[in-house]
Image 1 (tube, rainbow, N blue to C red):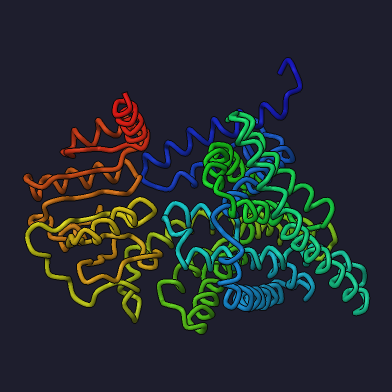
Image 2 (image 1 turned 90 degrees about the horizontal axis):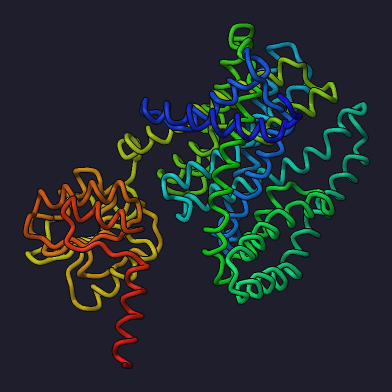
Length: 542
């Protein structure tokens, strides 16, 4: 190269190859995530050709983790966190303990020390923030009870890892005395408590005020910068001043800001950067992968993957059921935690540097992470396809037998989120008979009304649409925001009932045109309705 530009080269190579491999994966009908990981392998030090800067890639990936956790915090209030504490705290600690015991067992078989097995099991116990949140967001379950438990569980795991990173050096120094370890533990807990207190007392007052002031300037650019400055600044300050992780600091910053009416706007402003840096995270993970471990240590690798994918999942599933939650929640938590990520890499690297684990243990952790991340979408797909056959009880909100279609003239409403809930309430208040199709059985606010019938399932599937009695409905309202799925639903509904009126929610002019071409009578955009209301008001006052 004519100039030394490792940062630019790493970003360009990472994003370009991630796009190419991701597009190929999508074409082959496998998750694009697989393509991002393979892009990292391609620019890693273990394959021929260009080698990206691993240190820079890791730091860029850390930015993605910060922005992602900030976005999660924007949708996760203090009330939500406290609501799941009774299962998240004991559940996460118990699951970590089980993983550590399994790690010690595998280490003993491989001839490692007990301390090495402890560090190895600890590294296998913590799930990846990026993978878990991406999985929940893609399946629209982040805001459900299951999603909130999974996120709370993840936060507890992160707190335990923060303590572990502080205690590992003491363990390496001849094991460290009990008094010394107790002092370090008390100091770390004190720092975390001080950070939480600071955010609840000072941050809760300061952060929303700053953002409200910037919003009133009318500058979108300045507002976006303020959001990024808050997310990154709080995360960095939390790590430097209080010794907690970047991810945890960003999460609390978002959680404090969630109490502001500007939280949704803040989430939208950070979305493009969040997605881009999340991709770089997966590329950085792929760069760490040493393919030789597949042939050099096949039995050890198989045991490592079994602990991550099977051992942890079974433990989490049993723990959730023991706390009397539904089988659907247990399966979701089990699948969410059946992978490892960023904290695992940090622990494995530190453990090797402190001579607690051999180099092969670090390679096994990295290989296990790659394989578990690749398998994770398959686990969720299996749950989505076969979960109801496995569950001993019916999902919440699911009827025992297919409901009878409502009499002629009923309304079918697809989606019961923010928009769907408003539409549903107004229709029920007007005396309409409404059949609601909602993908998530534990979505909040599902109506318990004599004129409301709730069907649980994906509206793109044949069964829910068939049970809704489309052939006798007078109106179909589609309130979900997924353009591709809406087009499919409109086409099937129009084929089932040519006389039915169809109203669809659209995100722009292109979707309006697409839905109407598929058979929708009306496609409504937020911008279009705002403009219409403003024009109507202006003409009325003329």
